[in-house]
Image 1 (cartoon, one colour):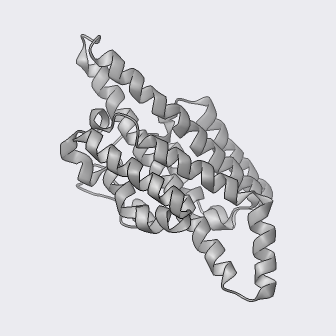
Image 2: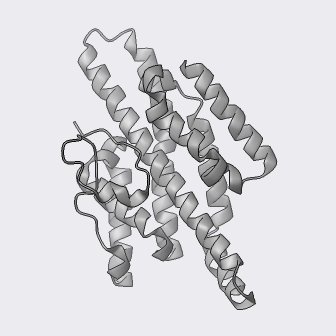
Amino acid sequence: MAPPFVFPQILRALEEDPEENHRLFAQNPVDVASLRPSDLEEFVKGVSFDLSDRELFCIEDQDVFDRVYSLVRDFYTLPPSCKCNLVESLRSNLSVLLPNVDSISRSVQDQEDEVPIIDRITSHRNALKIYTFFLITIIMTEEAHVSSVESTKVAARGRKKQVVQSWNWEPQRGRMLNLIANSLEINLSLLFGSSELDENYLSFIVKNRLTSVAAIISPADKEYLRREIDAGGENSN
Protein backbone atom coordinates (compact mmCIF):
# COMPACT_ATOMS: atom_id res chain seq x y z
CA MET A 1 0.00 0.00 0.00
CA ALA A 2 1.26 3.47 -0.90
CA PRO A 3 2.34 5.90 1.85
CA PRO A 4 -0.22 8.55 2.80
CA PHE A 5 -0.22 11.82 0.90
CA VAL A 6 0.20 14.88 3.11
CA PHE A 7 -0.58 18.34 1.74
CA PRO A 8 2.69 20.30 1.61
CA GLN A 9 3.08 23.97 2.46
CA ILE A 10 4.50 24.54 -1.03
CA LEU A 11 4.58 22.28 -4.07
CA ARG A 12 8.34 21.75 -4.13
CA ALA A 13 8.25 20.46 -0.57
CA LEU A 14 7.07 17.21 -2.14
CA GLU A 15 10.66 16.69 -3.30
CA GLU A 16 11.96 16.64 0.27
CA ASP A 17 12.70 13.24 1.75
CA PRO A 18 10.46 12.90 4.82
CA GLU A 19 13.09 10.66 6.46
CA GLU A 20 11.32 9.51 9.62
CA ASN A 21 7.86 10.61 8.48
CA HIS A 22 6.10 8.03 6.35
CA ARG A 23 4.50 9.97 3.52
CA LEU A 24 4.39 10.04 -0.26
CA PHE A 25 6.96 12.28 -1.90
CA ALA A 26 8.55 12.75 -5.33
CA GLN A 27 11.55 10.47 -5.27
CA ASN A 28 12.61 10.85 -8.91
CA PRO A 29 11.22 14.09 -10.38
CA VAL A 30 11.88 14.74 -14.06
CA ASP A 31 13.18 18.03 -15.44
CA VAL A 32 10.46 18.26 -18.08
CA ALA A 33 11.47 21.84 -18.96
CA SER A 34 14.68 20.48 -20.45
CA LEU A 35 12.98 17.92 -22.69
CA ARG A 36 12.81 18.45 -26.42
CA PRO A 37 9.29 19.23 -27.70
CA SER A 38 8.86 15.80 -29.24
CA ASP A 39 10.13 14.06 -26.10
CA LEU A 40 7.91 16.20 -23.91
CA GLU A 41 4.87 15.34 -25.98
CA GLU A 42 5.63 11.62 -25.68
CA PHE A 43 6.23 12.01 -21.95
CA VAL A 44 2.83 13.64 -21.44
CA LYS A 45 1.13 11.05 -23.64
CA GLY A 46 2.68 8.31 -21.53
CA VAL A 47 1.40 9.88 -18.33
CA SER A 48 -2.07 10.36 -19.80
CA PHE A 49 -2.13 6.77 -21.02
CA ASP A 50 -1.19 5.39 -17.61
CA LEU A 51 -3.82 7.53 -15.89
CA SER A 52 -6.51 6.29 -18.26
CA ASP A 53 -5.38 2.68 -18.69
CA ARG A 54 -4.48 1.80 -15.11
CA GLU A 55 -6.60 1.93 -11.97
CA LEU A 56 -7.75 5.28 -10.64
CA PHE A 57 -5.43 4.80 -7.70
CA CYS A 58 -2.34 4.62 -9.92
CA ILE A 59 -1.81 8.28 -9.07
CA GLU A 60 -0.36 7.09 -5.75
CA ASP A 61 2.04 4.68 -7.49
CA GLN A 62 5.54 6.10 -7.18
CA ASP A 63 6.38 6.16 -10.88
CA VAL A 64 3.10 7.85 -11.85
CA PHE A 65 3.19 10.26 -8.92
CA ASP A 66 6.73 11.38 -9.76
CA ARG A 67 5.87 12.04 -13.40
CA VAL A 68 2.62 13.87 -12.67
CA TYR A 69 4.33 15.94 -10.00
CA SER A 70 7.04 16.91 -12.49
CA LEU A 71 4.46 18.09 -15.01
CA VAL A 72 2.50 20.05 -12.42
CA ARG A 73 5.68 21.66 -11.08
CA ASP A 74 6.66 22.90 -14.56
CA PHE A 75 3.11 23.37 -15.80
CA TYR A 76 3.68 26.94 -16.96
CA THR A 77 6.35 25.72 -19.41
CA LEU A 78 4.12 23.15 -21.11
CA PRO A 79 2.68 23.81 -24.58
CA PRO A 80 -1.13 24.10 -24.77
CA SER A 81 -1.68 20.55 -26.04
CA CYS A 82 0.30 19.06 -23.15
CA LYS A 83 -1.50 21.24 -20.61
CA CYS A 84 -4.84 20.12 -21.96
CA ASN A 85 -3.93 16.43 -21.96
CA LEU A 86 -2.68 16.53 -18.38
CA VAL A 87 -5.65 18.49 -17.04
CA GLU A 88 -8.18 16.29 -18.83
CA SER A 89 -6.55 13.13 -17.50
CA LEU A 90 -6.51 14.34 -13.90
CA ARG A 91 -10.00 15.81 -14.07
CA SER A 92 -11.46 12.71 -15.73
CA ASN A 93 -10.02 10.38 -13.13
CA LEU A 94 -11.27 12.50 -10.24
CA SER A 95 -14.75 12.68 -11.77
CA VAL A 96 -14.83 8.86 -11.91
CA LEU A 97 -13.39 8.49 -8.42
CA LEU A 98 -16.10 10.53 -6.69
CA PRO A 99 -19.05 8.17 -7.37
CA ASN A 100 -16.92 5.26 -6.17
CA VAL A 101 -16.98 6.69 -2.66
CA ASP A 102 -20.74 6.19 -2.52
CA SER A 103 -20.32 2.59 -3.65
CA ILE A 104 -17.90 2.02 -0.78
CA SER A 105 -20.39 3.49 1.63
CA ARG A 106 -23.09 1.09 0.43
CA SER A 107 -20.79 -1.91 0.64
CA VAL A 108 -19.53 -1.27 4.17
CA GLN A 109 -22.55 -2.87 5.80
CA ASP A 110 -22.37 -5.92 3.52
CA GLN A 111 -18.64 -6.55 3.88
CA GLU A 112 -17.78 -9.18 6.47
CA ASP A 113 -14.02 -8.90 6.03
CA GLU A 114 -13.13 -5.31 6.96
CA VAL A 115 -9.56 -5.37 5.67
CA PRO A 116 -10.43 -4.94 1.96
CA ILE A 117 -12.86 -2.15 2.83
CA ILE A 118 -10.22 -0.37 4.91
CA ASP A 119 -7.72 -0.70 2.08
CA ARG A 120 -10.22 0.69 -0.41
CA ILE A 121 -11.05 3.63 1.83
CA THR A 122 -7.35 4.38 2.32
CA SER A 123 -6.67 4.29 -1.43
CA HIS A 124 -9.71 6.45 -2.19
CA ARG A 125 -8.65 8.99 0.42
CA ASN A 126 -5.11 9.16 -0.89
CA ALA A 127 -6.18 9.44 -4.53
CA LEU A 128 -8.77 12.11 -3.75
CA LYS A 129 -6.21 14.22 -1.92
CA ILE A 130 -3.60 13.87 -4.67
CA TYR A 131 -5.94 14.67 -7.55
CA THR A 132 -7.38 17.63 -5.65
CA PHE A 133 -3.98 19.00 -4.73
CA PHE A 134 -2.61 18.77 -8.26
CA LEU A 135 -5.71 20.31 -9.85
CA ILE A 136 -5.79 23.25 -7.44
CA THR A 137 -2.06 23.75 -7.91
CA ILE A 138 -2.60 23.87 -11.68
CA ILE A 139 -5.33 26.48 -11.21
CA MET A 140 -3.04 28.58 -9.01
CA THR A 141 -0.14 28.25 -11.46
CA GLU A 142 -2.12 29.16 -14.56
CA GLU A 143 -3.96 32.04 -12.89
CA ALA A 144 -0.66 33.45 -11.62
CA HIS A 145 0.70 33.24 -15.16
CA VAL A 146 -2.35 34.96 -16.62
CA SER A 147 -2.21 37.71 -13.98
CA SER A 148 1.47 38.25 -14.66
CA VAL A 149 0.90 38.59 -18.38
CA GLU A 150 -2.05 40.93 -17.89
CA SER A 151 0.13 43.29 -15.86
CA THR A 152 2.64 43.72 -18.69
CA LYS A 153 2.47 45.99 -21.69
CA VAL A 154 0.17 45.68 -24.71
CA ALA A 155 2.54 43.41 -26.60
CA ALA A 156 2.63 40.94 -23.73
CA ARG A 157 -1.15 41.03 -23.50
CA GLY A 158 -1.30 39.92 -27.11
CA ARG A 159 0.87 36.94 -26.30
CA LYS A 160 -1.31 36.12 -23.31
CA LYS A 161 -4.40 36.04 -25.49
CA GLN A 162 -2.74 33.69 -27.93
CA VAL A 163 -1.39 31.27 -25.29
CA VAL A 164 -4.36 31.15 -22.95
CA GLN A 165 -7.07 30.95 -25.57
CA SER A 166 -5.17 28.39 -27.64
CA TRP A 167 -5.89 25.76 -25.03
CA ASN A 168 -9.25 27.14 -23.85
CA TRP A 169 -8.21 27.92 -20.28
CA GLU A 170 -11.51 29.47 -19.22
CA PRO A 171 -13.64 26.35 -19.88
CA GLN A 172 -10.94 24.16 -18.34
CA ARG A 173 -10.86 26.30 -15.21
CA GLY A 174 -14.64 26.17 -14.90
CA ARG A 175 -14.75 22.39 -15.19
CA MET A 176 -12.02 21.96 -12.60
CA LEU A 177 -13.70 24.31 -10.14
CA ASN A 178 -17.07 22.61 -10.58
CA LEU A 179 -15.48 19.22 -10.00
CA ILE A 180 -13.74 20.42 -6.83
CA ALA A 181 -17.06 21.79 -5.58
CA ASN A 182 -18.77 18.48 -6.41
CA SER A 183 -16.11 16.59 -4.47
CA LEU A 184 -17.37 18.26 -1.31
CA GLU A 185 -20.71 16.50 -1.67
CA ILE A 186 -19.33 13.00 -1.17
CA ASN A 187 -19.24 11.14 2.14
CA LEU A 188 -16.14 12.83 3.57
CA SER A 189 -16.63 11.34 7.02
CA LEU A 190 -16.23 7.86 5.51
CA LEU A 191 -12.90 8.76 3.95
CA PHE A 192 -11.38 10.97 6.61
CA GLY A 193 -13.25 10.75 9.87
CA SER A 194 -14.11 13.97 11.66
CA SER A 195 -10.93 13.89 13.77
CA GLU A 196 -8.67 14.17 10.69
CA LEU A 197 -10.45 16.85 8.71
CA ASP A 198 -8.23 19.72 9.81
CA GLU A 199 -5.15 18.00 8.42
CA ASN A 200 -6.60 16.59 5.24
CA TYR A 201 -8.83 17.25 2.29
CA LEU A 202 -11.47 19.62 3.64
CA SER A 203 -9.01 21.87 5.48
CA PHE A 204 -6.92 22.23 2.32
CA ILE A 205 -9.97 23.35 0.35
CA VAL A 206 -11.05 25.78 3.07
CA LYS A 207 -7.54 27.21 3.39
CA ASN A 208 -7.28 27.84 -0.33
CA ARG A 209 -10.81 28.96 -1.11
CA LEU A 210 -9.97 32.63 -0.54
CA THR A 211 -6.73 32.49 -2.50
CA SER A 212 -6.48 29.79 -5.14
CA VAL A 213 -10.18 29.31 -5.82
CA ALA A 214 -12.52 31.96 -4.52
CA ALA A 215 -10.38 34.84 -5.70
CA ILE A 216 -10.63 33.78 -9.34
CA ILE A 217 -14.31 33.00 -9.75
CA SER A 218 -17.41 35.11 -9.99
CA PRO A 219 -19.23 36.24 -6.82
CA ALA A 220 -22.06 33.81 -7.57
CA ASP A 221 -19.67 30.90 -8.03
CA LYS A 222 -17.75 31.99 -4.94
CA GLU A 223 -20.91 31.89 -2.83
CA TYR A 224 -21.84 28.49 -4.28
CA LEU A 225 -18.42 27.06 -3.44
CA ARG A 226 -18.57 28.52 0.07
CA ARG A 227 -21.97 26.87 0.64
CA GLU A 228 -20.59 23.55 -0.61
CA ILE A 229 -17.58 23.79 1.71
CA ASP A 230 -19.75 24.66 4.69
CA ALA A 231 -22.14 21.83 3.85
CA GLY A 232 -19.22 19.43 3.51
CA GLY A 233 -17.97 20.39 6.95
CA GLU A 234 -21.38 19.88 8.49
CA ASN A 235 -21.86 16.51 6.82
CA SER A 236 -18.49 15.35 8.04
CA ASN A 237 -19.05 16.10 11.70
